[in-house]
Amino acid sequence: MEPVDTDVTGPENHDGGPRGGEAPSGKDASGKNAAAGQAQVPTLGEMLLAVEELWPESLAENWDEVGLVAGHPSAPVTRVMFAVDPTLEVIEEAVEWGAELLITHHPLLLKGVTSVAATTPKGRAVHRLIESGTALLTVHTNGDSAVGGVSDVLADALGLQDAAPLTVAANGLPEEGIGRVGDLPEAMSLGDFAARVFGILPSVAGGVRVSGDKDGLVRRIAVCGGAGDSLFNEVRASNADVYVTADLRHHPASEAREAAHNGRPYLIDVSHFASEWLWLPAAAAALGNVLADQGHDVEIQVSTTNSDPWDFILTPG
View 1 (tube, rainbow, N blue to C red):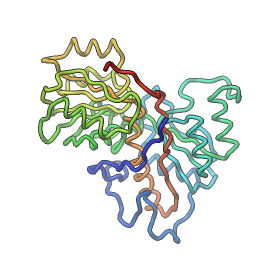
View 2: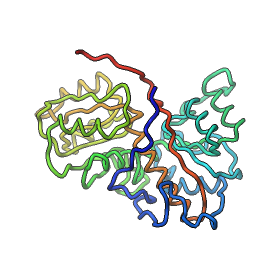
View 3: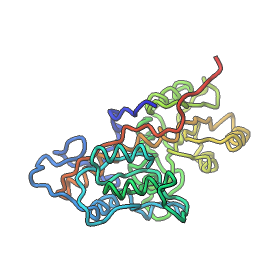
View 4: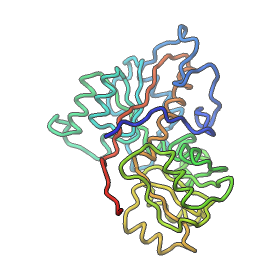
């Protein structure tokens, strides 16, 4: 499986600042302070406070499991790696690079477990983290919902204007919540818009699947990074011409087509991994900015591991 190209730049419209704030000047791409000689190494506990400023745990859905999975709050942190999935391959990459903290979007332990014995993949992951002294932190649906989160970055990358949440967060700002809906500056064909979607995402085996009239015009766009087929009611209420999300299952997609008005909303189904990977560079920059403002010197890197589960696809013709 090909590694992810981490040279993908963040969206032009996203400033990378904490919850919509301005990014400070005098920082490099990772948000490190130019006056590094005056910076201090933070503890993991201080890192958790910086993460909370950007992606509050209160924004997480009630079914989710976010926050610190492994690690001692008093441990120093000089290197941080961001990744989508806490797979064994990603953990090894973080350990080999020397990261004391791995921040992943997806949880390692979302469902209850009764054992972390090293006879299972999750058990081996926990053992490797602890034995190597690498902390693991999950920023999942709180990272989806926050300003500058997964769907915000996706909306910005697609050039959407006046984007607003599809569903507003219960414990957040009015502009925070799951999914986003906004407008393109000008209408374009579904085929051209699908090509734009394909062009901004990391290259993965599954590509991009489209349901709708290739020549149909679209302007109002709904997006949800990750699996979003639970939001069809909100998408229809938003009057979106097309809905971009991942993991569209047969029955929800079929029912959405049956319920469509004049064929809309059209559907664009993308890779779960690819739709959320776009957030990583922006998240790394945002955290770097917060840490630099607090006088901390931390090196931040995005994982190059492609954790999309598919390796190749066969298509007609």
